[in-house]
Length: 346
Image 1 (cartoon, rainbow, N blue to C red):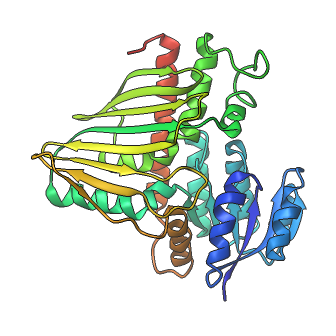
Image 2: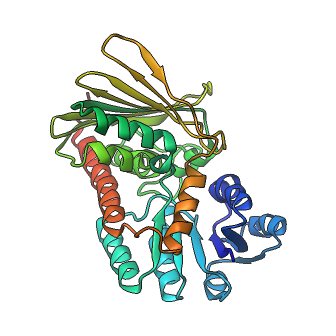
Image 3: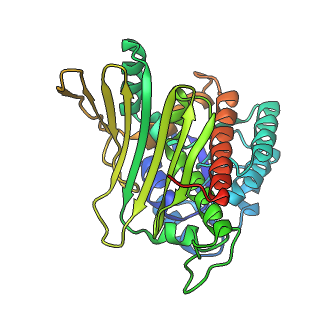
């Protein structure tokens, strides 16, 4: 019998990503309840699945038919809703990234889930992408010393991200909702939100090969919405770059890893589409490129399939790794925001 899923949140992540995947994995999961915060979207989405719908989270959490709670709400709600799902006796929680907004919140979540035996998975889909798995295997197998890591995002304008940096942040929106990035405190707050909202896609994979944050060398906001952050992890230099241009260029989402003898590139599909796995290619010392084939399934399918394995007991819940991933992201966001407040830029 499939596991019954209740989804908290009915925004783009739930509607365009998770619900289509669950609709394909009917042998593993059945969507039985969708809740929104009052937008009315849950009613529309639930109709396609023959599911119940409600407003707020209380009714869904009290629904005894729900085995798995998918937390697809704004990040500030994640911690509270995960803890409420555990208290309600739910078997598992799937949480969209980020897990938490602070070190303390992450530690409480992990401690409570571990004590209750609640299965917990964070939806860092790039980490579960088969292409990243191949790239990671290549880096380990050839034993090349990693020298640099670069994660580059060029995204078309997206109202969701514009709202991210003009509503609900630690600053007041100005002039038609756009933040005043000339104010260091505002810029630091925007950078923190972008790192925990966008860079978080790749930080768990980066942590695989650059496990510590020794020093943030530079950090700045790039108008109209973007960032440039560089830090050192041992002997490895890491750079994170995002730009969102009004002209709306084709999306680029690339992780490049340079080692002592080659370079590995992983090009991820654009957000909010199901286009199979990322594409991996490797450039050897002689300048020749080797392209690896793409898988038909993307990281969203992989993460939900893993959750099913966790529920069946076929794999262990990696509580310590989830906590370390969360700490890595919040620590980097804090250090980068502090660098902006110092007024230091490259």
